[in-house]
Image (cartoon, rainbow, N blue to C red):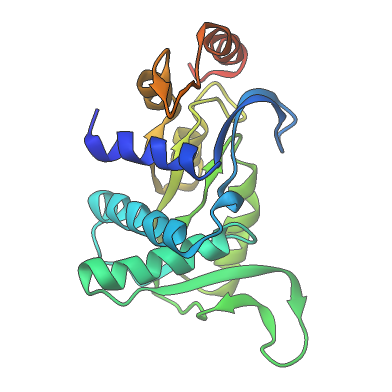
Length: 224
C-alpha cells in the first residue's frame, strides 16, 4: 500500500473522523464503522485534508477542470479546503461551489453558494463518503438544472466498498448510471489491512472482534 494511504488512514483516526463500534447510517444500515468528515474542525486538519483530496483528484483527473462542487453541508468545507490546496500545490485557480438546502430569495439569491455554474464548466464533485449512492441522486439534478456542465468525476475520501441499489460497489454504480468517473483516497479494505491487529497510539483499533463484525457487515452489504 502506498505510504500516503497509510498516512491518510492514521490522519482519519487522529482526527476522530474514523470510528469503530455500532452506527446507524443514513441508508438505514447498521455498520461497525463510521466516517464523519464533520469532525475535521481545526485549521491544520482542513489544510491536510484539502491536500490529500487535491493530490487524489490531480492523480485521477489532472487539473483541467474549473469547479469543485461540494454538496451541502459537509461538502462545503471540503470544496473550500481543496480549492485552496489546488492553488497552493498546482498553481491552478479552481472555483468552489456548493448548494444550499433551501433557495435563498434575497441578497445573494438562488440555490448555489460560492461560484456560479456556467455552460461548459468542467466540474469535479467532492464528498466525504458514499454508501448507497443516495447523495448523488440529489446532487446531479442540481448541477444539471443550473447549467450545461461537464461532470469530470467524483472523489470521496473513503470507498466503503458496499453495494448501492444493485450488487455493485456504490461508486461503480454511480459511474455506470451517470457516466462519470469515481475515485477515493482509500478503500475500506485498505483501512482494515493497515489497522487490523496492529497497535496505533497504544490501541488496537481493529481487533478480532471488530474484524468479525466488519466481515459480517460485508457478507450482508458488500459489493459483488
